[in-house]
Length: 223
Ligand SMILES: Nc1ncnc2c1ncn2[C@@H]1O[C@H](COP(=O)(O)OP(=O)(O)O)[C@@H](O)[C@H]1O
Ligand SMILES: [Mg+2]
Image 1 (cartoon, rainbow, N blue to C red):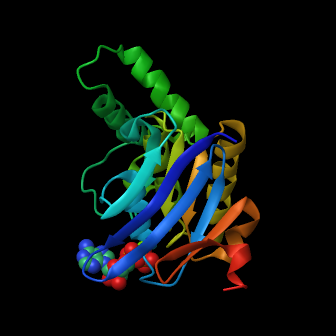
Image 2: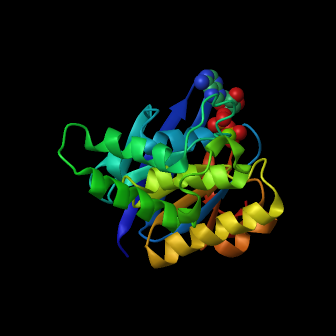
């Protein structure tokens, strides 16, 4: 199995300890659910993985693409952007991220458009490329933000409670799209979720964070 992310003896605390010697090996193509009580440290764990927070000790290795910036797409908790006060289209949102990635590199407008459209079609929103983002449903906005991550050629997608605040149909659609990205595009996916009953059928592995310790959910009964 090719590894995607490896954590070795990761410790982290703000004032009190949050992660206690966390070890984790994620394989390429995994579709992982992470559960745990409020305040268990799930969001903190994701931020350590993407490099937004630095572990107090231990190692975090991102092995896909060898580049943290390019390889990880991350949607933080409650990131539906409320109150964007000007009209903006999904195509523009996705394209902005592409310019950000390319920086000074020369890339034709035509190529940018085709990559943006490609990302939008991966989340089934090609037909709404020119809609007003502000008038789209929460589920659709979520998918636009996924496309914005995908356009960077992310091979890993990490979501912090992506289904909070969206209706059941949108949830199902979202997970079906993620399943498609996982299976057909071999994208490694990690999702923190409160909704295990709904989502467990999609995951190939479920982890629970409890008292700073991360364990496979199947082992949790033996704690
Ligand atoms: N920036 C911070 N400074 C201090 N404590 C924090 C900070 N962020 C989170 N915490 C605390 O760390 C614990 C874990 O938080 P978090 O990772 O958000 O948990 P979860 O996502 O599992 O609900 C909580 O007790 C929270 O209050
Ligand atoms: Mg959280």
